[in-house]
Image (tube, rainbow, N blue to C red):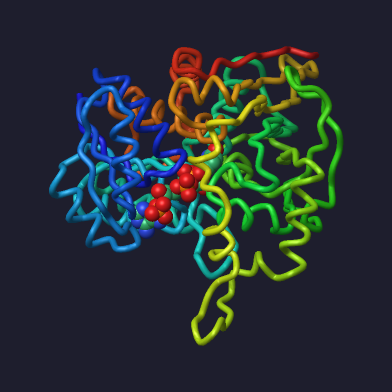
Length: 392
Ligand code: NDP
């Protein structure tokens, strides 16, 4: 029975608020804070029970410290942007509160995400007996748990992992991103990266692709990307020989992206505009649809899962674990599209397991470091049922 502070009132934050509000036996009280108070008000007005709301600029640790001291949560769930990870972690350390997020830190002026900055806080959290759980969305998050579950139940060693993320939904806009546009475009315009035989290999952005027949959706073209869970899974899966991440994109999306890149609209360095400095990608974000606004007319499904190969009792084994999620059903339940839903539900489950002491540790952790079974059980109960197929 605990109070939770959710920071960030966007697409994902809204889902977390809905799902926490639906589990009062764990999340006794909820406070939602974000940069724009009106967004907290909009979410609060949709919920079945009352919550506190507040305005905060989470780039400023002193503001977060003051907010935590006022509301006294046991856990802060960071559903804002990766830029705020370190300032919110600092505020948790200063006030003695646990921390959870869904995306690892990246500096605003450099499109480079990695866990080092947050893993470096391990000793400080440990010394204070606090816990930080990183990357507890779907990918990263559920995909890491799928790997831990496969290792526990199906394999002696996992050798190859392909994480495959397909969104076959249609939101009706010519171009929109399913989560924060700035973070999304920074991620997919980077060089591709995968790990094989002890080394990282780089590819030109979106140059490697292949077709996969996704259950419940059909064949789709998927593209190799670098994604943050690769970094932690390389560290935590013993015996791994190769791990890659793939995401599907439609031709319409790729054409828009290419044009935006060619005309300079995805640049993250400031340019002079009529005497003012503006960052083109930040400006682009302001004219694109907000992820939280996409749900109403969204239809179609997502399928995200892991194809795993390795050995069990000396024999080859291949297992595929995935979830299918329907945009329209998510909207009916929590007024959000499936990408926000598939991120927000695992965040709520991670928070639930921390607050009930089922997942407990002192320091900074990734989700694959804990027992996957209670998390897998909650996925089935909380709206993200999964399928496992033993193929070999
Ligand atoms: P949105 O852009 O919809 O929401 C972000 C929210 O954070 C907005 O309400 C925004 O406020 C708020 N915010 C931004 N900066 C600050 C700040 N300095 N202080 C306080 N609040 C701030 O994004 P999403 O909800 O789609 O994504 C949220 C997070 O989830 C991102 O970090 C994203 O990377 C992550 N994610 C993780 C996934 C996973 O599977 N692991 C998948 C999808 C997303 P305002 O509107 O006022 O700007």
